[in-house]
Image (tube, rainbow, N blue to C red; front, side, top):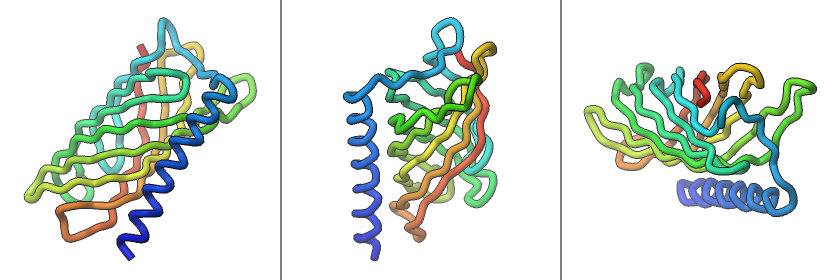
Amino acid sequence: MKKLLLVLVVLMLVSGALTAQSVKEDKEIKTLQAPPDGRAKLGLLLGYPSGVTFGYRFSNWFEGNITAGYNFIFTKSALISANGLFTLVNIPIGDAGVMPLSLGPQVNFIFGNTFYIDIVADLRLEYTFANIPLNLFGEFGFGFRFFHNDWIAWNGGLGVRYVF
């Protein structure tokens, strides 16, 4: 059962990356840019885990993020995570711009009474305001846990970031 789920998650991550790449080749993905450049974002993530998050948009279709935080809910442990998100689609919301829907792999390193690693497929929906340098996002991830008794991993939360 574990092997089947692992294969399914890997296939989902690979297909998401390939879909994002084919979208990039077919047409340019337009993103909303806040002044002056709008590539870097720094703020807070509340949920599982909670912490400080930093993101950087490398291109119109790829963004990297790092979070340092604490799991207040279940494990009471420190966490460092990194992910790479590929923009799957920009959802138009009228005159207010677009909301990018992104998918990509995320690795969580959890330090507490025991050390373990989560590898999840992270799905994020976000919105960057046009006139103020503020970014709001929600995300959810599901995957596998290694070096721990549990083997199912998940994360999710809501965040706000200053865009610069």
